[in-house]
Image (cartoon, rainbow, N blue to C red; front, top):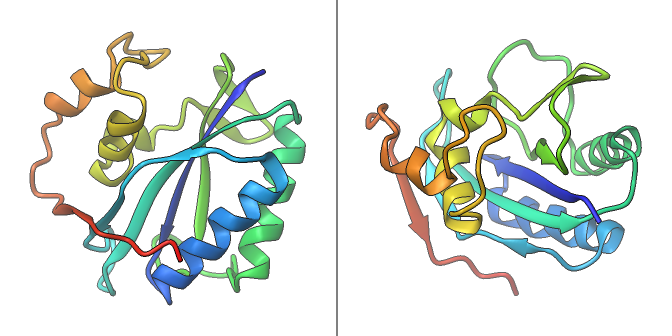
Length: 163
């Protein structure tokens, strides 16, 4: 069964929205595994800190169905898509990896570029899947994290109440 790897982030009612999003993803895709929750500064705009994590599910759905589900969850939690660029959001869910898919599929580029650019994606991914290799760089995620160059991106694992 293909592995679906998602990045989740929120900076509006962040803890509540992360809990709700993960719960809804688990209702749809079954029990998954998730990284620690990390707190990070907003990137690309001034705003409240984000809470971020990576979650992995085993999933037989098509990428199209997965994206539809993600958009429904985001919309249900108050996400609007009328702002340009980076902005505050109740929830953002991105497909980072899906099985062995690589390239552009319906406007989604896999593996997602954010893996190599943002600490808030790479560190939780390296924690969760340290030995898995990136399909393009051929490096493990733990090796990529150890070599990550942009140390200005503040990131801190937090104790998170899933209750």
